Length: 391
Image 1 (cartoon, rainbow, N blue to C red):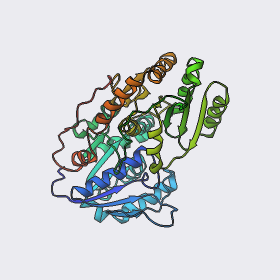
Image 2: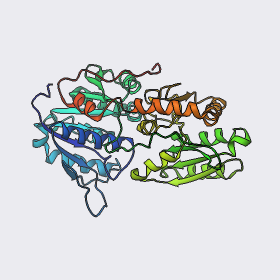
Image 3: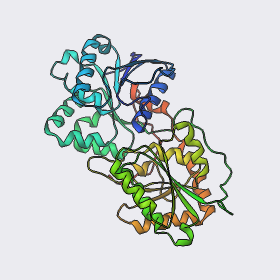
Image 4: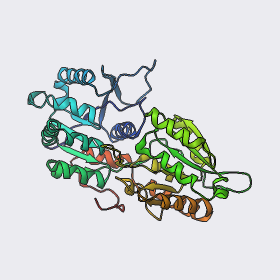
């Protein structure tokens, strides 16, 4: 179905400010980019306890649900969708995450309640979860058939989607991730890493087994003692798995490496952390149905001139260019992870070369490109070429 002539855009999400994370960033950036290219944007987002709403250039309405994706939250979203169905029928409705997708699935039997111009974005993990349950698998297939356009941020997630749900093949476009608006980058000066200053390895990501902080920590502790003594490992991120954090802190307390837990660092303060670091490491792994579909944080680290060390999983190979902006390591090879970290920590010219390459790489696309692919009829995928691992 054509999207030509439609200028009203409703974005329905449970992942929006003040929530943080990759999907929340995608949602906010797509809303901003769509507004800037001329769409009348209205975001329906999860309820917030903040006393005052942030100032937005477009309309933001808060849904009655709390964004937990539980049954009560879903029912409240369904009620809102039914109440506003008249407005939704004559506009583009964009759903960038799984919570509202589940609510829309409940409306599928009553076709008159469904938006006519539906656009969806999939990130990876929800594809596996939806496919694992027979009822949700069937409903997802119906939702995909009803949609006008579907997007993924990476070739890897697109291949995963089409493998599980081939119904999306004729309508899927790539909308590669980009740097967030107002992104600040550190100065171009090389980091010294000499004298009394310790070399800093930084990880930014919630404390969760999938993010692999424990694997990075273990790899750093396996460095030669004289090198490990010259390093610090900084871990920034909120706690999402208390048992995992406890294991991390117990491992960090063992001798051989200085480790700092920085907690949930606001976006405004992250620039300062990147500026103090020498190497960025985020060694994600597949964890059940949870996969790393892309990883916007890799782009941010590269834009700050940091070489990146990561595992070759999911869509990470589309955020990190192996041998150019960093190193991609098999998650089954801890010795290779230690070797890659050691190589960067002992070779300042290599760090600077990879950091310079990363600065250019991180700015190869914009959210305007993504919004154009999502909402215009010129949906030909003009995403920049990027090296990818075989699906």
